[in-house]
Image (tube, rainbow, N blue to C red; front, side, top):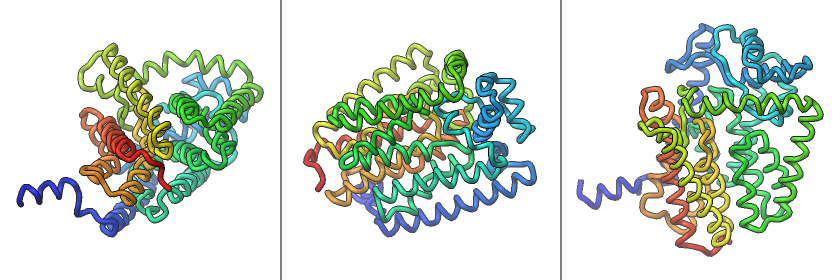
Length: 394
């Protein structure tokens, strides 16, 4: 192969829209096979790929069970919460409930149904939200977004990354014409404050004042409602659990899921905690600066930059959270189709697409996390696109 041919191959010039669709269909079929295998293996008490048959969703379901019994405060008492989890999955390890009572409020009805039915309904509802948003962003790529490995991560672990992506995407889609609806979507992210924290910065930078007001009102109402329903003692218990949450972060517990933050990357590569916090701070400052500039220079780029800045800024980030990468990937594909792909855009898109499953496999092998590399590469590709072409898309 000539030098020019090798360069073309590395730029993924061979990856046409038709081939991308075909590969996505194969990946989706494989994903569905893994889901079926997991269900079958669960009946036999084993798990494919060495993943134990359990689900983080058990934490949400057990929290609902305690809350419906009038014992919401003990959701944050490890032994009591774990005892309820083991009534359904006797051999499972503990799945901590590290969320504020806002998520407890949203989880409240889950235990009204048996565990497996509740899990199925939760994944169906959040999966539909994710599918609807990504279809709106890139109508002809529905199969590709369903094949995105972050989807199977959320299914396997029973997590809420698809819901988070649906709320971010819904808010971004509504931001221009329906700011109150956008604020409602963003405000509901109060259940995951470490990912919601960047949203106000983007709204203020873009002068989306009505959306900002709606976000603040929605978040405040949810916080007040959770306090009214469960009592202030539940919030006090959540705050008292903060040292445990910090220990989970700093000591890298739940490594089988795959840590994705720059903080954990430094720690896993042998850096100490002070260095990890410093690197995370520098990365966050750079991401926020780029986000603010993008909101002024290329307003439509907020669809890509807000999710990327959110992922870059959070030290607490796991593989299922990488579902958010679907939003900047959709934006970059649309940009590439309209104005031409830059040199390495397709390679970066493939890296981001594979990152969720690659990071889990790397984590289980004891290797440094993959997620930060994918986040940084996609961040640079998106930034290059809007910086070179500042005019808003028609």
